[in-house]
Length: 165
Image 1 (cartoon, rainbow, N blue to C red):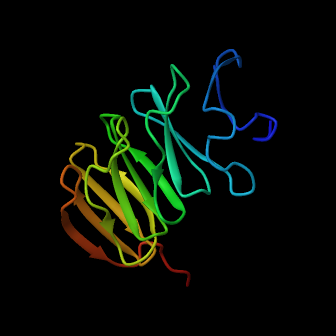
Image 2: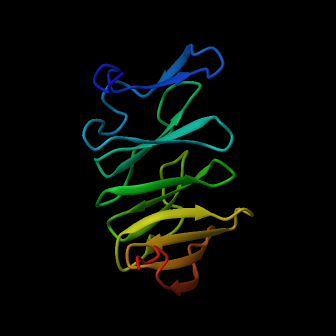
């Protein structure tokens, strides 16, 4: 089913029975589906889902009610990834605007100042203990951050994309 046929809503399905069990997001508010697609990721507690589209915003949805938990979480350019922390209350977004942002998903407020790179930030990984964060930028830099404070702990430079002989 195309996003247009689905009415702009996300739909939930049971894997074992292939039955639709619910939907989230009011029509037309899931992001910007279509040519640019929509990214969807489930929270670690299976109670929330984050969507990102081409409108420079991430939206966190409560799966029980189908409603957003807060206002959209915005960047000034395309969001490239979104990653929940283990507590499912914290979300990290990365963007082509050169920042990663740590958010409180219930309030929609930033938990830290923007985590800055010199180029587009491609992805973020919350470390297994939940206290640290690693971001990777287009400029081939890995940055290690304290998740709670946003303090930069270490920068590692190198060719992490490999090379072709």
